[in-house]
Length: 56
Image (tube, rainbow, N blue to C red; front, side, top):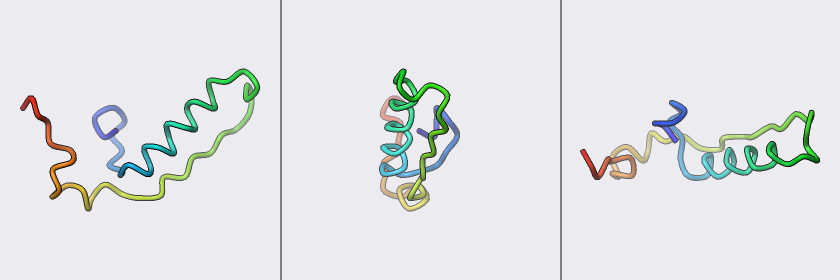
């Protein structure tokens, strides 16, 4: 998600934002305000290699 949005967040936040985007695309939510809470930060994942680029 960091590359696409600049948000350094973890998997839970990515899932939350994905669901919010999917709801936003549905016609029954047209004109609605959709809020997504990003429940975690990606800082702890930096040393785990989660964000490593395999093509780098």
